[in-house]
Amino acid sequence: MISYPLSNLVTIIKNGYMAKKSVVTSPSSNIIERVLSVMKSEGYISGYAKITNKSGLSFFNIQLKYKNDMPSVSHISVISKPSRRVYSKHNLMPRVQNGLGILVVSTNRGIMTGQSAAESKVGGELLIKIF
Image 1 (cartoon, rainbow, N blue to C red):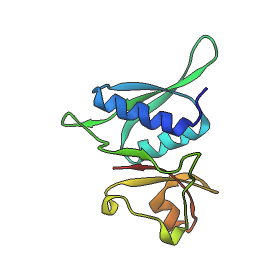
Image 2 (image 1 turned 180 degrees about the horizontal axis):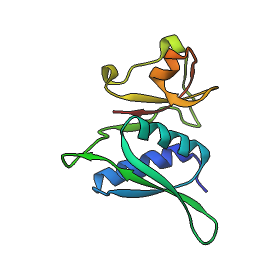
Image 3 (image 1 turned 45 degrees about the vertical axis):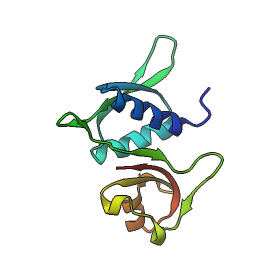
Image 4 (image 1 turned 30 degrees about the vertical axis):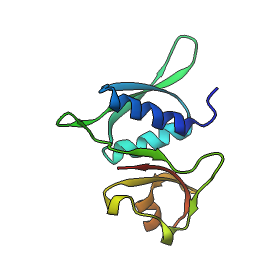
Protein backbone atom coordinates (compact mmCIF):
# COMPACT_ATOMS: atom_id res chain seq x y z
CA MET A 1 0.00 0.00 0.00
CA ILE A 2 1.24 3.46 -0.91
CA SER A 3 0.97 6.00 1.89
CA TYR A 4 1.03 9.10 -0.32
CA PRO A 5 0.50 8.54 -4.06
CA LEU A 6 1.85 11.93 -5.17
CA SER A 7 5.24 11.36 -3.53
CA ASN A 8 5.39 8.00 -5.26
CA LEU A 9 4.54 9.59 -8.63
CA VAL A 10 7.21 12.28 -8.22
CA THR A 11 9.83 9.65 -7.31
CA ILE A 12 8.88 7.48 -10.30
CA ILE A 13 9.14 10.43 -12.70
CA LYS A 14 12.48 11.61 -11.24
CA ASN A 15 13.97 8.12 -11.44
CA GLY A 16 12.67 7.65 -14.98
CA TYR A 17 14.36 10.84 -16.16
CA MET A 18 17.63 9.96 -14.39
CA ALA A 19 17.63 6.52 -16.04
CA LYS A 20 16.74 8.06 -19.47
CA LYS A 21 13.57 5.95 -19.70
CA SER A 22 10.97 6.78 -22.33
CA VAL A 23 8.05 5.21 -20.43
CA VAL A 24 7.53 4.71 -16.69
CA THR A 25 4.69 2.97 -14.86
CA SER A 26 2.79 4.35 -11.87
CA PRO A 27 -0.09 2.95 -9.81
CA SER A 28 -3.44 4.43 -10.71
CA SER A 29 -5.54 6.82 -8.65
CA ASN A 30 -7.88 9.71 -9.42
CA ILE A 31 -5.54 12.39 -8.09
CA ILE A 32 -2.61 11.00 -10.10
CA GLU A 33 -4.73 11.05 -13.26
CA ARG A 34 -5.62 14.70 -12.71
CA VAL A 35 -1.99 15.67 -12.01
CA LEU A 36 -0.85 13.82 -15.14
CA SER A 37 -3.51 15.66 -17.13
CA VAL A 38 -2.12 19.01 -15.95
CA MET A 39 1.46 17.90 -16.70
CA LYS A 40 0.46 16.84 -20.22
CA SER A 41 -1.43 20.07 -20.96
CA GLU A 42 1.58 22.12 -19.77
CA GLY A 43 3.98 20.06 -21.94
CA TYR A 44 6.02 18.31 -19.24
CA ILE A 45 5.12 14.78 -20.38
CA SER A 46 4.22 13.44 -23.82
CA GLY A 47 1.20 11.49 -22.63
CA TYR A 48 -0.17 8.79 -20.41
CA ALA A 49 -2.42 5.77 -20.75
CA LYS A 50 -4.37 3.83 -18.15
CA ILE A 51 -3.65 0.11 -18.31
CA THR A 52 -5.52 -2.63 -16.41
CA ASN A 53 -3.77 -5.96 -15.92
CA LYS A 54 -5.35 -9.42 -15.66
CA SER A 55 -5.77 -9.24 -11.89
CA GLY A 56 -7.80 -6.03 -12.16
CA LEU A 57 -5.11 -3.60 -10.95
CA SER A 58 -4.79 -0.44 -13.00
CA PHE A 59 -1.61 1.47 -13.78
CA PHE A 60 -0.56 4.50 -15.78
CA ASN A 61 2.08 4.23 -18.49
CA ILE A 62 3.62 7.71 -18.53
CA GLN A 63 5.55 8.79 -21.63
CA LEU A 64 8.38 11.06 -20.54
CA LYS A 65 9.34 13.99 -22.76
CA TYR A 66 12.86 14.96 -23.81
CA LYS A 67 14.19 17.95 -25.77
CA ASN A 68 17.57 17.36 -27.45
CA ASP A 69 18.18 14.36 -25.14
CA MET A 70 17.58 16.58 -22.09
CA PRO A 71 14.56 15.97 -19.81
CA SER A 72 11.74 18.50 -20.13
CA VAL A 73 11.50 18.43 -16.32
CA SER A 74 14.65 19.64 -14.60
CA HIS A 75 13.12 19.68 -11.12
CA ILE A 76 9.96 18.17 -9.64
CA SER A 77 9.13 18.07 -5.95
CA VAL A 78 6.23 17.57 -3.58
CA ILE A 79 5.27 20.67 -1.60
CA SER A 80 2.35 19.54 0.55
CA LYS A 81 2.86 16.28 2.43
CA PRO A 82 0.65 14.33 4.83
CA SER A 83 2.77 15.58 7.74
CA ARG A 84 2.78 19.20 6.54
CA ARG A 85 -0.04 20.55 4.40
CA VAL A 86 0.67 23.81 2.55
CA TYR A 87 -2.16 26.08 1.42
CA SER A 88 -2.20 29.40 -0.41
CA LYS A 89 -4.75 32.11 -1.17
CA HIS A 90 -5.21 33.09 -4.80
CA ASN A 91 -3.55 36.47 -4.34
CA LEU A 92 -0.53 34.94 -2.55
CA MET A 93 0.07 32.09 -5.02
CA PRO A 94 3.87 31.64 -5.28
CA ARG A 95 5.65 31.76 -8.64
CA VAL A 96 8.05 28.99 -9.63
CA GLN A 97 11.39 30.11 -11.11
CA ASN A 98 9.96 33.56 -12.00
CA GLY A 99 7.16 32.02 -14.04
CA LEU A 100 9.24 29.40 -15.87
CA GLY A 101 7.74 26.52 -13.88
CA ILE A 102 4.31 25.57 -12.61
CA LEU A 103 2.60 24.71 -9.37
CA VAL A 104 -0.01 21.98 -9.33
CA VAL A 105 -2.75 23.09 -6.96
CA SER A 106 -5.76 21.23 -5.58
CA THR A 107 -8.71 23.64 -5.38
CA ASN A 108 -12.42 23.26 -4.80
CA ARG A 109 -12.76 23.49 -8.61
CA GLY A 110 -10.36 20.61 -9.24
CA ILE A 111 -6.65 20.20 -9.78
CA MET A 112 -5.07 22.97 -11.88
CA THR A 113 -1.95 25.06 -12.25
CA GLY A 114 -1.19 27.83 -9.78
CA GLN A 115 -1.56 30.45 -12.49
CA SER A 116 -5.02 29.27 -13.53
CA ALA A 117 -6.05 29.08 -9.86
CA ALA A 118 -4.93 32.69 -9.34
CA GLU A 119 -6.79 33.78 -12.49
CA SER A 120 -9.93 31.95 -11.27
CA LYS A 121 -9.46 33.61 -7.86
CA VAL A 122 -9.43 30.33 -5.94
CA GLY A 123 -6.81 29.20 -3.45
CA GLY A 124 -5.96 25.68 -2.47
CA GLU A 125 -3.41 23.12 -1.43
CA LEU A 126 -0.02 23.35 -3.19
CA LEU A 127 0.74 19.82 -4.36
CA ILE A 128 3.73 19.75 -6.72
CA LYS A 129 6.34 22.20 -8.03
CA ILE A 130 7.70 21.54 -11.55
CA PHE A 131 10.29 23.39 -13.63
